[in-house]
Length: 138
Image 1: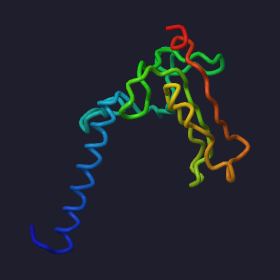
Image 2: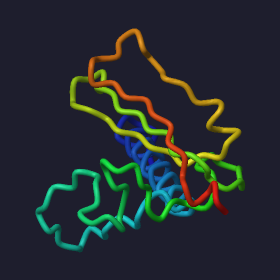
Image 3: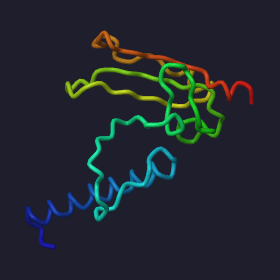
């Protein structure tokens, strides 16, 4: 490949693509992300809002129950049993909407969590730590 602008752009694009593929593979190995559809698969046209339609596919909202919690802490390299769900909801700084983040953590990593960026937090900001009832009885 020639050392000109086009060649440099191709190498940069290739490096970015390899990085995205590597990150997706690592995420799937950790079980945090489903296998992405192949380019050849048809999209069903439905918008994915990030929440499962049934209670078995995700978190049940409203009653505090967390079905099918992961057995291990969300933190990389930690093999402890998850005991808590740390949930945070905040408005994205870009103005693109509300972001919800949840992590199943062991007791030690839950102690390290705290609300972030409170200076610019809006009225809909939520930071919550809920125990996983199955983890406390096991």
